[in-house]
Image 1: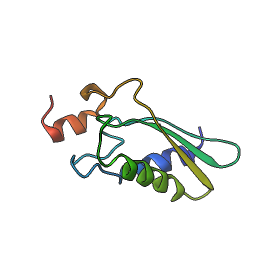
Image 2: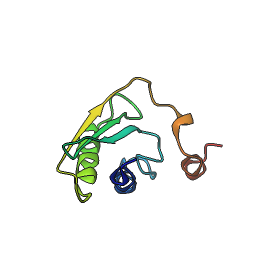
Image 3: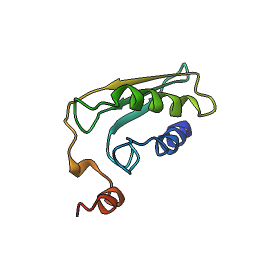
Length: 101
């Protein structure tokens, strides 16, 4: 596995939905992270709700997080709602932080 994927994930842990005090990765919003042969990061993510008012900001913050990793020359974030997000996608730490157990 490309170690830049781990570094991108670490950077995404600094991206927060302003309405939820848990980062997007631990919330389970990130479905896939990959780096191709042209050093482009490709990220598939979702949102907690399709009508999220900060969707554009979260997508751009995620893109910028990937671009902050050395060796990443471009980044594309694809937004999907399949499968739809639900609480079971959160990390155990996130569920504890938000009081879901």
